[in-house]
Length: 112
Length: 116
Image (cartoon, rainbow over all chains, first blue to last red; front, side, top):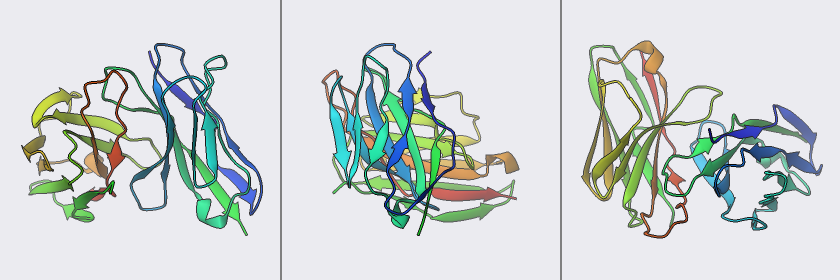
């Protein structure tokens, strides 16, 4: 079936470090891909999205590129802040479906 | 504005109680969703409404009863819940465009439900 796999967490970084959170998806169909962020005690916020191959989503210094050849949508940020500490979910939505399929989530902890 | 609001923020109920969760959006979206999120897990889809009609029910027990009174509101009625139903309940909405590309879902802050 259609699935999303994320790297296990927690990821612990120092402030201003470079961040990569890996996300891969099964190569069925042409899904739209999303990154959502969940801060402690809150709901999910859309961070960025890409709807077709080679699209790059970006927001608040975060970027992810839809790579069809590697079936990946890795999240990157050049310099993380303490305020970026949260759980990050990679998700896909397949054309004609309404359900988001989420990865397991990756907790990011940024230390001052 | 991409705001989805949910009330209450927290809810504690006994197994014999009846309560309702409420969700509202004013973005003109015509699809609305309920998700359930257990601790340290991703959200799981429960229900989808499209143009105020139930279009997806992911085999959710009948003690959860959704209702969509109009295009801006979505309710989840709760009755005779079990302690294992304790979770964060998230509402989301999206446009229901006729194009083939899937629409972005925007989430509310959630209701944290505890069943005693």
